[in-house]
Image (tube, rainbow, N blue to C red):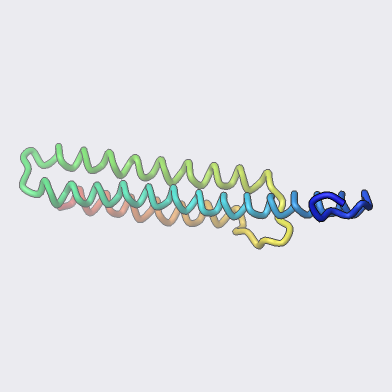
Length: 128
C-alpha cells in the first residue's frame, strides 16, 4: 500500500476518477471566479470613464473629454462581451459532478445587464 491507496485496482481507479471529478468541479468554480474578475475589470473601466468626466468637467472642447471617456466605456463593453463568451465556452466543455455551477445563460444575462448599464452611463455622460 503506497500513499494510503488500497492494493485493489478497482478502488484505486475509483479514487482516481473521484479526484478527476473534483478537479473538474474546481475548474468550473474557477471559471465563475474568472468571469467575476473580468466583470469587475469592466466596471473599473466604467468608473474611469465617470472619473474622467469629473476631472475634465470644464475642459474645452467638451467633446474631447467625452470621447476619451467613451473609449473607456467601449473597452468595458468589449470586456463584458469577451468575459461571457469565454466563460460560456469553458462552461460548455466541462461537466459538473458535485458542484452546482451557474447555467451558461446566466453569464450572458449578467454581461447584458452590465452592458446596458454601461450604454446608459454613456448617454448620461454625453448629455451633460
